Length: 428
Figure 1 (spheres, rainbow, N blue to C red):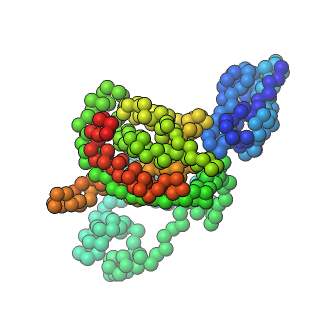
Figure 2 (cartoon, one colour):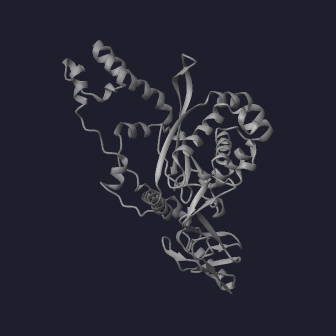
Figure 3 (tube, rainbow, N blue to C red):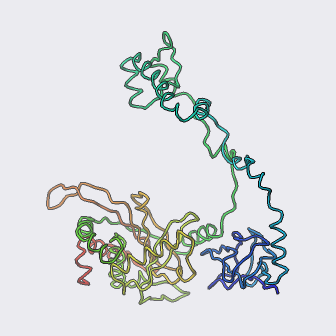
């Protein structure tokens, strides 16, 4: 008996997907509910399980195929015929003596660049390694002894390997001009250029296409504006330092910066509801719940999962949920539900070293907060110059429904709550 493998219902507004890769090949034995093919949508990747236990007898949609909901992906047979086909495949396995053959094709992707000296050393017996290294170091010492002070200084500062330089002075002595001439030598081509040539063309993934499309839509459809402020992170950092060990022992998770920012953002959203609203036709929809989207960078691109009902979560709950959702994102295990329902977004470019940026809206939301790196900066405090850990904040917003006064006041309230985090526990 043969069971069809169909493209499942993928979620709201998703009608098609791309076959990312088959996890099994025709003839493989599969168990019921075992993942056998991975689909890529414009939001998430998902695995399609086997409907029954048996043998994968047919693959109808190859890797890279675009398939609609309900389309036939393949079929699984639970009959004896499927088992016999599996046995036939097993019979054409390579003979044991073929296992000693070196598979040279596994090295095709690597650039064929070899250092003759290194290969000669690797061919020597292991016990001779020390002797070879000692001999290799001796010429370096002898040559260093013949270097002039000016040359020796350049060699030391620039960490130049003098063994690779042919001196033009008497008896091959290295002169300062020899080092200067190195500046005119063209560097070797990159490994990527050697491997792929001058250019390489790779089809954009559905996720990357969607990211590009939505970012462009945000710029075209919203009256995008950004306002900035700076926040002194001294008190937040001290509170984290003083309570980190107890917090981690009690809740099993580190106390990070994101819980402070989520809490401060929720307080500001409650005071300025237009920032938590969206435009729908000729109406403004005010959201009286607070689902905070947060950007997570993955190998396949940026995804923005949602922290649901953030106003009802404790600091520990926020940290636990963010850690769990972030791990799911990096492992490609997010569900459609993880990505839907956000009302406001926080993007932390600071983890990558960003000093300042203008984040783009995550439509249909009307606001996004950009966090940046923390840098010690001189600040004027009570008439004195002091060094403080400062972070620049950026709020991008849709000027169609959020006025300048609201946006500036919203960001100022976040700043005040972060600079005096006790306010977050007093709900003021």
